[in-house]
Amino acid sequence: MPGSREDFPTEEVHASMKIVRNETGQTREGSDHQSAIASKQHEKTRIDIVVEDNASSSREKRFKSVMGGPEDSKRSQLSETKWARIPKVPHMLRGTKDFKILFEPRVVSVGPYHHHKHDLRAAEMLKRLMTKRFILESRQAIEVLYNKIVSEISELRNCYNKNATKKYNDEDLAWMMLVDGCSLLHFIRCYTTEGKLKDLPIKYHNAAFAQQDLFLLENQLPFRVLELLLEPGFEEGMQMIEQFIGSAAETDPPAVKSDNEEKPAHLLDLLRRRLLGNQTASETEAGKGTGWNSFRNVNELKAAGIRFKPAKSGSLRDISFNSYILLGFLKLPRITIDDSTKSRFLNLIAYEMCPEVPNEPVVTSYICFLDSLIDDPEDVKELRRQHVLRNFLGSDKEVARLFNEIATDLVPDSDAYKDVKGKIQKHYEIKASTWIAEGLHSHFSSPWTVLAFLGAVVALFFGGLQTYYTVFPRHN
Image 1 (cartoon, rainbow, N blue to C red):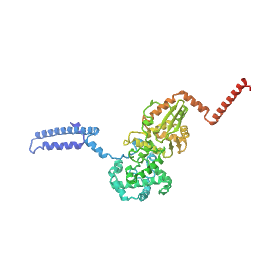
Image 2: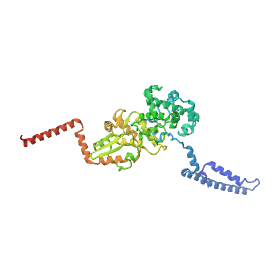
Image 3: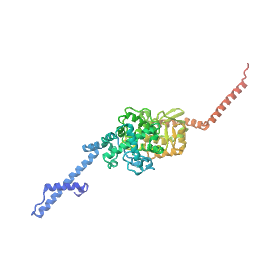
Image 4: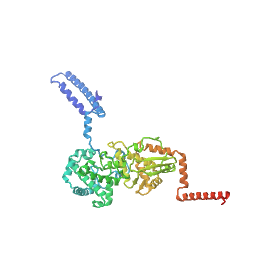
């Protein structure tokens, strides 16, 4: 059966041939020619039978690779780590315009992914100086901190892509994490302590770029490293980290966090959790609605009598809509737009795309919802006027373009904000509210027109009063 030989590796066929020959034996010297031919034919037949057995074995392995088996489960257990992995940016986003600026560090590298880059080597000596200052301030011995990391280096190694860590032995990788972790914590301490930013051995503008670098997906340390370095004063260190996250959030971070919250995977994961807040899907009115929306942007909603207000919390889930017959109010979390906004949101979106993260694309859905509201600079202007959006980027046109670029090719959760959209659509379809809103916008868009209207009403009132007393004079 020649076909069976081509379907399997050559090594398997050779192994089968050896086994057959051991069983059948060689032809003895002096045997006739016909006996030799018969023996060879018999040997060939046996070989084909064994290869067919190998085919069955190979099929079973393939079935087990899909359906699972003892060997596969054991292998998966060995590859798992008790801390979430730090993935690389998904392939889908690697074609993003200005990828290097948006996803790669420009001042300082953290972890193994960008450690080798020549343009980041200047920060390596500064990281050692910052490491020394952190160790002296924390009053811990460098040997103790190093040994803590070495003791868990196998698990820490598994947090990264294997191709990025295979060139480092355990000692080199542990040393990298020690220096990166200590310098990172010293940077956070100086950044969040009033008057200590000047203690950093870098310029102010580099400190701003370094802060952006610490929220890139491929520039993260396992949070376990920070835990080991902060012991035993972890609670105090955690407050410092929370303050740093709050200063970096584009929206106001929630003031209260859950006591039962799981430990974050890294700083970017912690930032995402603070942006999401503690609300559940039911509290955000998700899961209802028609699924079909005819409204387009802020100005169309404004024309339908819908006004915008800042939400009480900064959670990206805190979006709600209330309708009062002719007027509606859409509440949105406050958001600050600056030079770091695009990079930060894209890295959060990249993190949500990774298979290691639970399938809950809240940031992605939030960006898509804002993109549906913002089409042109006038939409941005209205959100600014209502104190929902703060623009530190420049012109309103740039902000509108920023959201259009971020939301390109994104797929939101179909249930996200579904009830809010349904309520908006229902209000939008009320024609009377649209007519009244258009009339108010056309005739009462400025305080002068309002004053003129009030003056006309007063004049009509007194004119009518004078006419009445002329027709029906009153006598003392």
